[in-house]
Amino acid sequence: MNLNICNLDDYKLIQVSGLEAKKYLQGQLTLDMDNLATDRHYLTAHCDPKGKVYAVLRIWQIREDVFYYLIPSNLLEKQLTELKKYAVFSKVSFTVMDDILLNALLFNDKASIEQFILKNNLKSLLEKDISHNLSRSILINLEHNTTYLILEDELTIISITGNKQDPLINTENQSVFKRVNVPSSYWYSKLIIRGEPLITNETTQQFIPQALNLQSLDAISFTKGCYTGQEMVARAKYRGANKRALYSLIGKGKISNLEIGSSVEIQLEDNWRETGAILAYSQIEEEVYLQVVMSNSIQKETLFRLPNQPQIIFSILPLPYEIEI
Image (cartoon, rainbow, N blue to C red; front, side, top):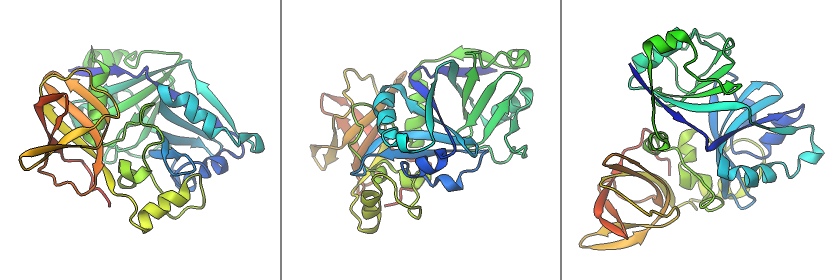
């Protein structure tokens, strides 16, 4: 069977370690680091003092004093500089892991992903039976020095391989799965469909976490202690200060010269008005996916278009979670 594989060259893996690593991250990220399970990975946000998001991270813990997170490469320099700003006062260190290969394995159905797990003799970090709870699982293959992160849709795996080995190096894999290399648009389409916010250099420090639906993705703790930006994030929740949400749009056609951060047009009866900010887009054949931050009061049947390409009409794609206002 075919297995679509997308290289994730535009991501970096960071290790955070040290006796005070957890305490330090607890004061920097929106997630409650005290409640992480070592067989699961999580989304979290790193914010500036005004509560605006530097970056959305996928983070996990492998030991009490060792954490890893994935971040888009173009955000790494700025985000890591900010994260390390107070590290001189703590027993914590940061390492960019360069000698690895990052890939997204895109499966067509759950049966295929379960067969992949079986063929690779994968185990969860806690040796649990994960067959009925694949979402956010962390699986390992010690023989091939590979960590697998199963995403929330239970159809996508991020493979992290040491020494830059191919994720299908296992001969049993090669006998079952036929590798099909696909462009990054396949990966970004997955994220847009799933409603996972894609922050880049063009949109960093523009939105609070709730405008990116991170409260609906279990990426914010409202009960933990203080962290950078916490006051503004809490105010948005308890005083209703947030008026925006993240939407996924779908249309048919070919797009060109689309600028990240630009607006879309919303249909208001017979007229169109500019609104929102585009975070990401992806094109797969004739289907176009947009990720846009707009007012959280928009009706689900509303139509949209691009100001400079009005021939493509977009509709709202239902997300796999409810948006918490």
